[in-house]
Length: 273
Image (cartoon, one colour):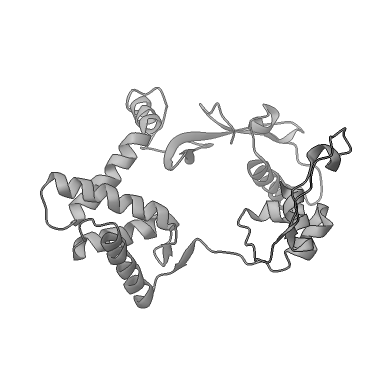
């Protein structure tokens, strides 16, 4: 347990303890083994918020784990880092006794690494994900009886991953084609724009088009956030609408109150915004 680990680090020895005696419960005394020397270094890996909670609420944690280091999950894309990535791919293939990648295959894996970071100047350090991709690509290379893993094999593996996870995305596209989701891409409308929501289904992300509508009338209600009123608006969306309200007051209500009631909503949206 956590408490036993902290005691072992503090005393530098492991004791076989009776849980009943430890927690003040009734226990039968038995022969107590001698403590085992415990002189090691321990590295904890976890999320920053867990570290903050332990640091604030556990005094002994601060004394036992004094060194903290943030580990980045991406690195800059430079000539040296690209070469290191290619070398890592080669070592992985050799260690796992699978086909090596040719130049086009290595290039596609590096492109995939950039796609994972959503930044063309960065490379992903999620080696487990990249390793799984290489193994999947090796399967498709074997099916084609290829000597090396080529670009098309890596691309096939990526597309198969997407296919296994994109059922909801395909349903959204189908609803757009059938005009169940109304999205106008031609012409212009007053008080209406098209927006794009990014949805996540585990390891797959995709965009869902939607219509954002504003209606204005005479009144004194100000800007009404329908998503917030319906308890479907997140904190970031609510902050954005409040900033919009402040902008309108600063621009049009310097000398007298503004006589306006406006509503803002995401049409055909039934989840959190």
